Length: 183
Ligand SMILES: CC(C)(COP(=O)(O)OP(=O)(O)OC[C@H]1O[C@@H](n2cnc3c(N)ncnc32)[C@H](O)[C@@H]1OP(=O)(O)O)[C@@H](O)C(=O)NCCC(=O)NCCS
Image (cartoon, rainbow, N blue to C red):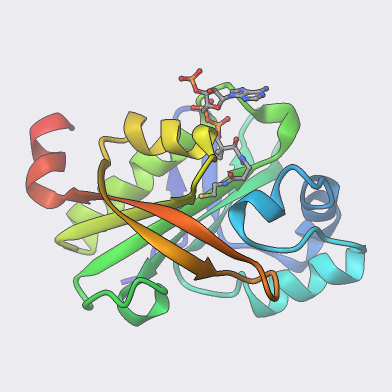
């Protein structure tokens, strides 16, 4: 069951709309965001419009909207089963996220991720969640730690949405039982 809107203290998580393209471009055109997460820098508003239409139009891909300003400032998604490159069974999912540079360091993505995790376990009844980050991405490592994920394995030479780029990726996991003990 897809849920259209999730809410936390400071954030609304809702589906992306065409009119979000300007905000998406503002943040996704910064080279400190996409490449470290495995996708190319947005070069134009047209790029952002295309991504909203072709990449973000999925049931569990949410725009991270700051309640205070009502602006989309990041993205968080849950890829279930075959949607994940980790080749997961249908009762497991992988989460991915980013947030615009001006908003780094306020704990906003951990806040959003904890709500997605709750939704995945309590509503979707998934049994295990995964979170991967490329070697050296300590900021993402911290988010996964704050949410309770634990190191599982390192995958070598992983490809991504940037053609020809291979990197090693640390994979972390959080089972329903582990989450139940810390929630
Ligand atoms: C990873 C990311 C989503 C973290 O989101 P966030 O909401 O800033 O998360 P937090 O506030 O918990 O900060 C996480 C860590 O980032 C680091 N950090 C925070 N602000 C920072 C800043 N201004 N500059 C550099 N690093 C910073 C800190 O190490 C922090 O950990 P700490 O709280 O233990 O000090 C965000 O940095 C981002 O979008 N990065 C680029 C895209 C990306 O890497 N996505 C993940 C792909 S796997």
